Image 1 (cartoon, rainbow, N blue to C red):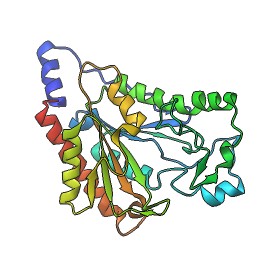
Image 2 (image 1 turned 90 degrees about the horizontal axis):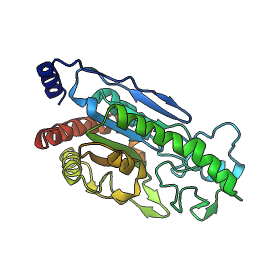
Image 3 (image 1 turned 120 degrees about the vertical axis):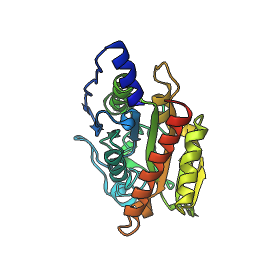
Length: 275
C-alpha cells in the first residue's frame, strides 16, 4: 500500500507528508512504532483495558483490593504487554489507556449501563459507591474522552486501513470454566476476522468467532471504524485467555503466533481489497 502511495506521489511530483502524532493525552497514550516506508503504517492496535492503576485522588478500599484490583474486573491482564509486543513487531501504532476500567470503562459508550460498574461477582465495588452525577461527568471528561481524543488523532493523521483491538479474558467467569483459548470478535469485517481465526486454528489454538463476547460490545473499535474517512476500514478484536498470557512458558509462543497470524491476515486483506 505504501508502495502504491509512493508511486502515485512520484507521478504527481508531490512530496509524501507524514504527520507527527501527538502521543501523550490525559490518561491515554499512543506508542508509535511506524517505520517509513512500511506496509504496516496503516495498521493500528488498541488496548482499552491496559492498566489497573487508579489516578491521583482515587484509591482501592480493602474490599476492592481483595476482590477486584488485581483481577480481570479491573483490567485485561497481560493485554498491554502483548499489545506492545505485537505493535513493535508489526511496526505499527498502538493506543492504550492509563487507568483501571473500574474507574470508567473506555470500551463502552457513555450511555452504556456498564460504563461504571457498581458490582462484580455479586460484590459491591466500593470505588463506585454513591456515585454522583458530577463525579460521573468528571470521569467521562477526564478519563473516557481523552482515549477517544487519541483515537481521533490516529484516525485523522494515519487514516488506518486496519484496526485491531487487543483484550484478554478470564478462564473462569462467575463459575463458568472457559476452554476457549482465543476469541476473534467482529461486526462487519468478516474477512479479516476469518483470516485471524483460521490462522490461530492452524497454530493449534482453540479459537472461535465472536466469542467469548459479541463483536458489537467494543465501543473503541466501532469508533475507530466509523471515524470520518473516505474508505472502508477493516477491524476485529483479539481476545486472549489471560492465564496463557501470564504463563511464562506459553506466553512467548502465543504472542509470536499472534504476530504471524496478524501479519498474514493483514497482507491478505490488503491484497484482496487492494488497500
